[in-house]
Length: 285
Image 1: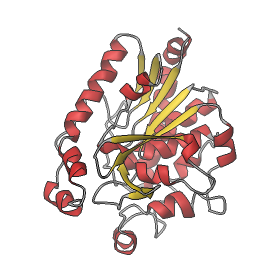
Image 2 (image 1 turned 90 degrees about the vertical axis):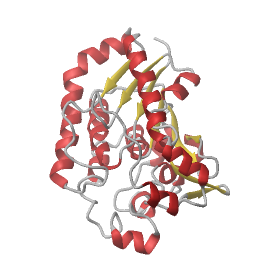
Image 3 (image 1 turned 90 degrees about the horizontal axis):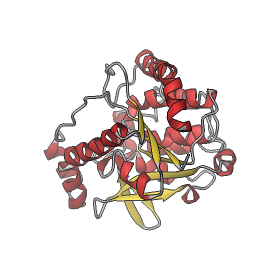
Image 4 (image 1 turned 30 degrees about the vertical axis):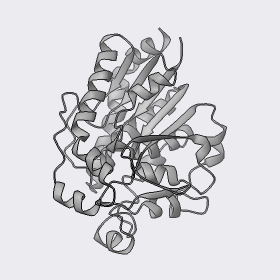
């Protein structure tokens, strides 16, 4: 069958969709040789690889209105619109309210890679699972650190931003790492066309110390379209299987509506069951 990889796109709160698909994978005992994930998708992938069904959903429903999770208060206190340290340390650590089962993640033989963007160069960096440690999930934090909305995260003396800035759908990297076929979970529906970034003056000002990150943001729509085309070309060749929301999400990256998030998660479960037989055929071929 060759080496089958899983790609999980980011997208902030829209990643409730991939949380649903990943829980369906757990229900069906579907495993992969390789997982590469971006931003909130990287956090979702960690829970999936740790075998913690339902954990991701809680981060889109139960914890979103905690004071440290998101909002102006978090931004003024920490410089992060999303409370990255609250979400991926206070909640996620072994003593937190919803800990990641790190020993289970570590024991899982699947390769796991997290995509970040080097703030200085504006280029992607790929951290392996071995870069994570018990109660030290900075690689996931960095992958989620949206420029301007969040401060960059320091790891080993370098600063990193959200991986979606430089490699939003890391299909080419999965192929370079030896994957013969890939399954991809996208956070946007088929036909989505990414437009140039808005609020250019704002992020250019807030990230002025990192001109290459600003350049990457300016060109992000071009990078996205290129990766998108590569993935869909692979699908035509029978080498990619794509999950994308079958109904357009009625929400933004920052939506905190519990009911909307639950609906998007349920859509992920539904889309999996619709495609289950086709996916099995793809993975066994």
